[in-house]
Amino acid sequence: MTPTPPEARAQIVNMVRDFVRREVEPVASQHDRDDTVPHDLIDRMKELGLFGITVPEEYGGMGLDYTTFANIFEELSKGFMTLSGAIGTHHILTYVLTHYGTEDQKQQFLPDLAAGRKRGGLALTEPSGGTDMANLQTTATKNGEEYLINGTKMFITNGRYGDVFCLLARTDPDMEPKHRGISCFVVEKGGPGFTVGRDLDKLGYRGLDTCELIFDNYAVPEDNLIGGKEGAGFGMVMSGLETGRINVAARAVGVAQAAFEAAIKYSQQRETFGKPISEHQAIQLKLADMATKIQAARLLVYDAAAKKDTGQRVDLESGMAKLFASEVCLEVAMESMRVHGGYGYLKESPVERYYRDAPLMIIGEGTNEVMRLVIAKQLLRLPEYQL
Image (cartoon, rainbow, N blue to C red; front, side, top):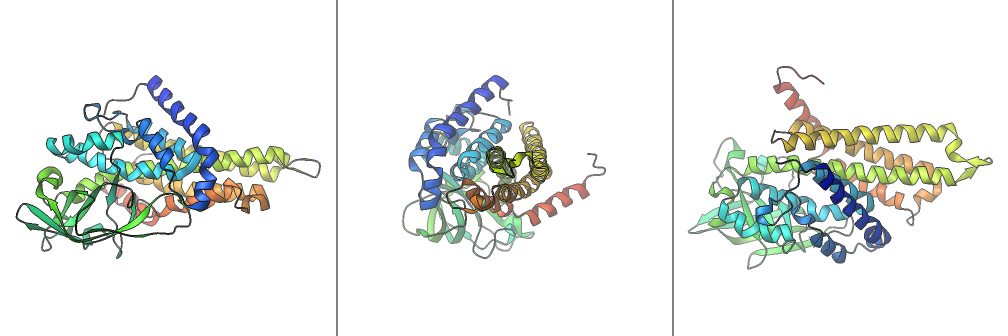
């Protein structure tokens, strides 16, 4: 991927930062409280081109690199992490299409996805689990010039308001190893056999449609088999998830930064024993640790993004970034609440929202327990790993 020039990156990030400050921050708490989807803000994101961040320009996207991609997710999440979710799995779909789709599939789907005329998602996780991808139960059975999809997908972001999904299904139940029997499809919403199930009521990450999708002999044209090749879907999505982990890690840095900024501002305003609490050593130690860990997390994120920009495999780096940044995010959110005391525990405080949003990054895009296994597996494959 061609690196985005620094001046262009700065201009784009400043545009997003201004959008967040002017339009997102004033309404974020209300959308979180009422669990309402901010359709007007999502429409503005379409106008800003954020649905096509990494889509090549020839297909209507912005063609930006993953460093800028991470910058954008960090800035959005500082204001309202939910908004980054509207384009998170959308970009996994566009990634898979860009890198593995046929030219006809790119021409058919990418322009509408890049413009936001269609919202994408990832139909991966199932009720029986999401970590063990190789054992997924959804099937795609060839029937003439179609595939019949049967199964249920769970925790699907953009499930209700999305239009197109990157779906993994088993096309060969007898294939060993099992992951080689899995194929990847572009599935468009609509028609008999496609049902959007219940909306899931979440602790945090509110204001975004998260649903289950139910497929009952849902017919998908054979032309929607990504790359036109059965059995290659596992590798396609695993590569896409590298970018997903970069975006989740960037979200974690954004939420942590917002929580830290709230803490340092409050510590300079709140007085005890005749002076601001920022002058007490106990608070200063917290602030120093918070800032240091956030910066370390940020550097991991941008290291993974920079390596992805070179076209290299980054499951090790993206796993490290996602693991560390998400754990730091939860810790910083808790520490910010402790700095705020009772005021941080109130629903009217954004710190309370940061604390509820933070766990998503620990369990989303692969739990951190899985991330540790991914990291260790990659380390053990290398003849020598030097920090």
